[in-house]
Amino acid sequence: MTNTATSSRNLFEPVALGPLTLPHRLVMAPLTRNRATAEGVPTPLMATYYAQRASAGLIIAEASTPNAVGQTYPNITAIHSPAHVAGWRMVTDAVRAEGGRMFLQIQHGGRAGHPDTSGLTPVAPSPIALPETIHTPAGRVPSVVPREMTAEDIASTVADFASAARNAVDAGFEGVEVHSANGHLLHQFLAQGTNRRTDAYGGSVAHRVRFVVEVTEAVAAEIGPERVGLRVSPGNTVNGIEEGDTEEIYPALLAALAGRGLAYLHVVHADPEDAVFQRIRKDWPGTLVANPVLPADRIPDDGGHAQADRLLAAGADVIALGRPFLANPDLIRRMRTGAAVNQVRDAYLMYVGGETGYTDYPALDAGE
Image (cartoon, rainbow, N blue to C red; front, side, top):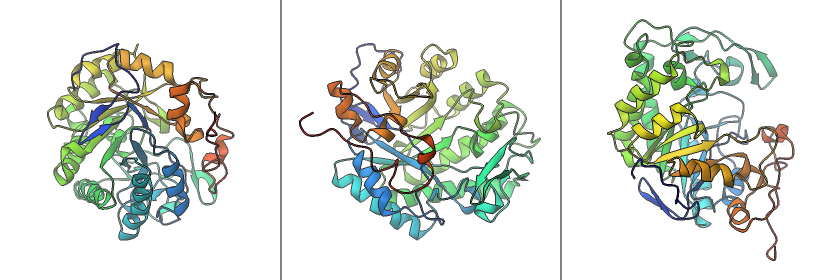
């Protein structure tokens, strides 16, 4: 895949991504929905949810933790035990039966965790607490100061990501997405505001990108680089992140990984007019997945089609949509035909468990 902007790209034409040929350029972005067990095991309800959305070119399943201390919130999924593998196998089997394909996002929360949820003190590059409350089984509570990771912690976490990737393939996923975005652990190492280290993992840009590079390389060595994507969110301030030198971090990170043969790079909140996005497209030699900025209060009437076309014209190869797939299990059919889209009923229902606001969004009737 070249990095030349091609305005004639069709959203509904096949496209190569790693070892796969996707039937079209629309993929489902990872969406945490808190429907797993307290131990992080996927449930039959989750298999139903994902199978309903199997018409996506690829489903990038919700963030799953590579170890216990990486857990962020209650009832999120994990991928570090045989029970997790078996639960996810149930999901991938259901999606494959409907003709779909799946990658699994692997995410370590870093300081975005709490002992009331995981039973463990969170770890992070530096002992700087999340500057906000955090959701736990007992409700929202003040965040705690994380423990600064030692060299041994860093090495074991790199190994945990690689092991989680192997587990994901064993669970039936076609590949994995390494989550280095949205203020979680890998992003915390990139950002000046959360990384105050003075060793080989902090200080200069070259040092701050090192952990992300090591994790990505270890995962690629374990399952093959063609099965590995990387997700980034340049300039994103969620979870109290302050990068400080966004324009320097991402060119350095991409330079370190551009020749590794990864399946894709996934840019969150991509804006075709943004200089950093334009630089990323110029620098990244492989497949670029772009997650567009959509209105916070509603899904566009076209499901995001216009924004997708803008990003394709700016050089993106694949478009990842989140909320449009959440509320529309048959989003691909609706976008192909111009049918009306469902709106998200209530954002609260995204995270409270059960079928409501999860598997009960209607698809079009056969005659529509």
